[in-house]
Image (tube, rainbow, N blue to C red):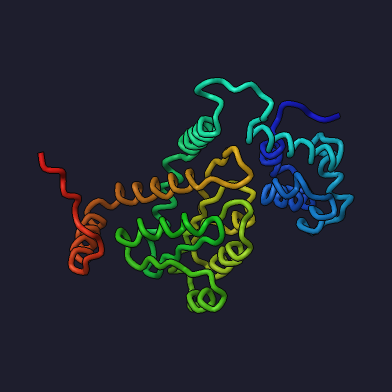
Length: 290
């Protein structure tokens, strides 16, 4: 019998730790690309998870959906609920896409605020500010823009921050010599770029700490993370929102500043001096004359 009233992705996340290794592989594949699974085939999911089609069917049954078709129907329902049904009556002032999106983002931000302990931010900040090596910032595909923003914020605050480019040769060259004194700040959101998992694995094998910002503890790179910060993502669309990722980056930067006000303050002052010398910014806004 199919269980009712529970989002399938939430149900999968809640039961991750109790699943068998085979089921965990299927779960990770579903969490990586729920939209693709919702409108794909059992064979495609089996290939993505590296298991048999029968294992996919058993996974759906164990979750209470009777099999793959029931799981797929629940995923499709979840997507329709996020997008909002066209046939539902519109409520003035609350039924537009703008309203639904705003409500979803507000929920996500509250969830991140409630579920991100200050101790977790402190641990992540401590990892980044420790060590004499480089802080490598990496993100690919949908995560690249958030990684770029993290580099923009952290580079004036901490020494030895470098943005790792994702091109094959540039990536390999940048990772030469990575060791325990280095750190990785990585970003990965659904559908989870494979190269990010490889980079996190590389740093883990080198004994270097990994701080991961992601939208699910089941993200493939999470197994290699020293500290993981989770972004909620309830955007009413089949693509991820970057809002909570940006929020966590700013929280992390604020935590670093709070922990090191003197040293970071001096570095920011120096950055302002250098920016001024080289004309990095166009100058102050001139107020209108009264």
